[in-house]
Amino acid sequence: MAKNGNKFDILKFVLAILIVCIHSTKAGMILRPVFRLAVPLFFMISSYLFFLKQSTLNSKQDKYKGLKKYAKRILLLYLFWFLLLLPFTIYYRELYINFDHEKLITIARSFFFGSTFIASWFLMASLIGVTIVWVLSQLKVKTSWIIAIGLVIYVFCCIVSNYYSLISSCPRFIVAYNSYTSIFTLPFNSFPCSILFVGIGKLLAEGQFAPYNKKLFVFLLFSLLGLYIEFFFTKYYCKVYFDDCYFILPPVCICIFMLIGQSRPFEIGLNTTKLRSYSTIIYCCHGTLLSWQHIILQDMGIKEPDNIVVLLKFLIAIAVPIALAELFLFLERRCHLRWLRYSH
Image (cartoon, rainbow, N blue to C red; front, side, top):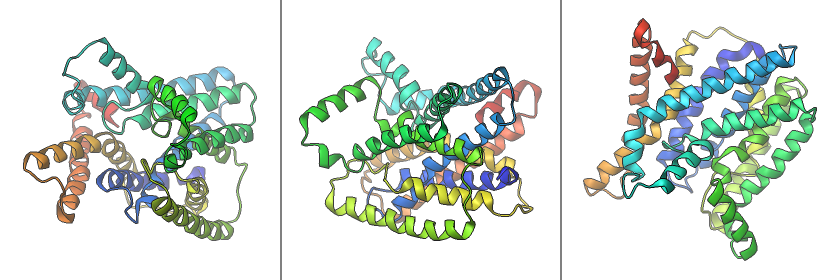
């Protein structure tokens, strides 16, 4: 797997496209379960690469420095886009209306546990998830136990996501859940849902799970079938409020990740480093682009855009970030603009 970093760069670019698809389409679309593979796989890739580096370090001090370096990179990336997109975020979220200390607290809470600019929750979720797993590892908690804890939390995320209507009639649960979300935010759009996939990424980085490709391919087919069975079940038998988490997502993601990682290394005639930059910038600014296109369409009186308009929105949300990435990559070569590298 360690020799296939360029394949993961290509995978991340594909996943970034799938993220745009999630925010461009409505729940219930036939491909939505496939789109939902993107975020868990992003968590697994980030965790795998981080813990793969950690495995090469011997002392606790070096491992702590590795964690600090990872945290610094994520936070600088987050701060870059937070500041750049702040005017758009203020307008879109209507933060300028009756601004007071409560809204300031909401912004701070959203920064750490939710989203400031649209879709930003993944950045802090990844950082907090990796940090939690790292700390538990330093406390000698076995990776299998970390995954078990993450699995319990992920089951909870599934229940309050796709299966919320089944438990909405339980008042005590709803009161407790609302108390949690008032302090943090929706668990399936925050760090709790990351712990399982970060733990799996760590397990794979340690090389503790490596079945043959043929078995993986068969298991992938059955997992995909199970994912669509669950999709149709929730679509027709549950009132889906949020379609973020499915019970069958983890096995599908594991199979895809390992099939790509275990395949033979080969030369790729692409600048995968540039693809990595594209992926990051697409992820960070696509939500803002889509939201502004939505506002413009509403101002034009188009409340339900047809397929052509939806496709156009999708293409703009990909093309503009790629153009922006090319601009940043060009400008950051200059000494006084090197800070632009924090954008990716």
